[in-house]
Picture 1: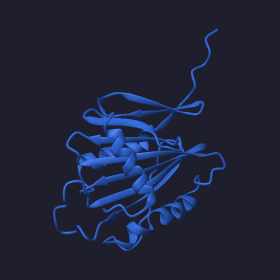
Picture 2 (picture 1 turned 60 degrees about the vertical axis):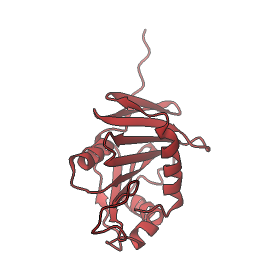
Picture 3 (picture 1 turned 90 degrees about the horizontal axis):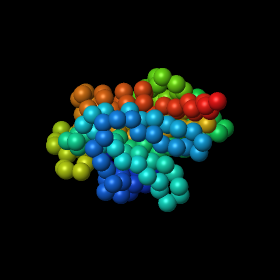
Picture 4 (picture 1 turned 120 degrees about the horizontal axis):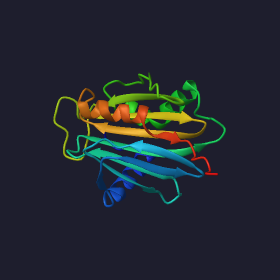
Length: 191
């Protein structure tokens, strides 16, 4: 899917820079969000990188070694729970993904519940109409899946770029968003 929205351009710029610092990882990664920790269980064979954009927002990128999948996430403080309810998530995604929907085969939204372990989440997928029925050029993807995962105080906005939505890599990536990116309880002080 071609980059049409500002959000995607920001994520892409981060991803390009973060790729310079990417290392092969096969363990849990921990990001600090203020005084909270979020654990990311990076699957074996996937490459993880993270950093902050010029506004200080924490972002992460996970790709498989064969570059079939590109997962980009952005952590947003949400102290007022503006993205906590499904209807709020759908409204947010409809605004962020408007250009994707207009340029897609689907020509609309098919929101699906993310059903994470903790919190709530919603996502939708689009097929780039200009790439449908042909092999996408290197660096472009046929499908974009964008969603929100929210828990008290925070929201994770994610984008998965892929050339199919049935592959093991795609399913692993969605499972990663559902089951990982979990807040880790603070360690209790030793007495």
